[in-house]
Image 1 (cartoon, one colour):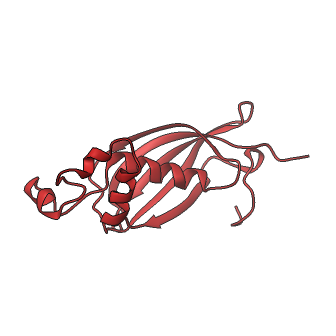
Image 2 (cartoon, one colour):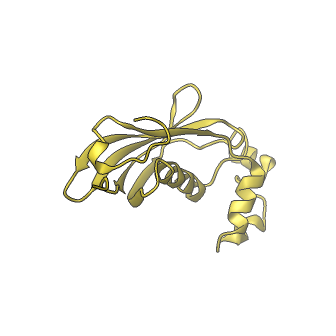
Length: 148
């Protein structure tokens, strides 16, 4: 699909790729995310999300991106695909931790299409630069019908 053109259910095919986003999440972004959430008590003490020392105590190489933030970033990638995309269902499996300050690629591949319901099913992938899976999942996206 040409970049920048609206995406409609009529033009999507199985195998089409949701536009990949490559990102790296800093500790500052993680702290801002938690600060904006009802669970801001996560900032009250050192933990694997806001402290290098605490993350290393837990056997990690450094701070990681929290699961809810991972899901929010995946949802953003899916809904950024085109205007009018509606996220109906998202289900992910956190297979590995997502290290902060580590570049990852987030994308999806259309695996099923229902023209009647105007929705597609998408397999979700979050991978490190070597292609190792960090997160896998699926989503159902509503797509608009092309105006006549």
